[in-house]
Image (cartoon, rainbow, N blue to C red):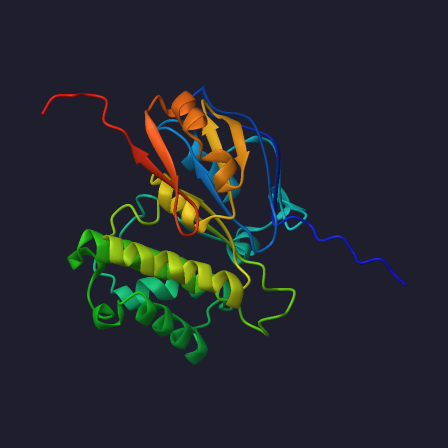
Length: 278
């Protein structure tokens, strides 16, 4: 009987170092993310969370190793990388006058032949995503006329549309990596839940691998399979939400007094008031 072939990690990072304008931001980060896993990067401001996502997406220079499904990042063309990685940055550029539907259709660009046009299937994929994000009524609206929360959902729609790959859902080509940098920062609690539930659902139907950054530790623990805590550009803790979200660990690296209790799906982190003034 033949042994099963080992599966390459979706993302494999070794000794990742990034300096911006000569200032070290990441200082030897190691990370491995399995296909289909959701890993959330947490840490105080300035820890290097966004820079880590930008490095995985090939948007900043780095030293060390980054492999996507076993392939060194530097060997991938821009188009090949776009077929593997979809990113929602914190502050995406807003093309003036572009309608929501047209913006979301940009996510289908890696699958369209040179000088070709989007297919009916591409439009159907985008409309389905817009509908799930409550954006279909805004399809013809220019992005700049939307509220901050509506705009954030449009940014997510583009990335989610990019993550739906052509071909059979169980084919080996279905291995998209979704990078989400603070994806719910501008959303109300209802849309936060809708967006994160949709991402979680697409992990199963589209075989997405998700790496996100989040400041809300309770939400991070609710949805992620694993958490990685960065501090001063280095990984200082990693594991399940229960293993990472402890009062001692958060107090040491955030300088905050918190209480951690057990929620329905993960730990809940509650700030504890330090002042006694009423």
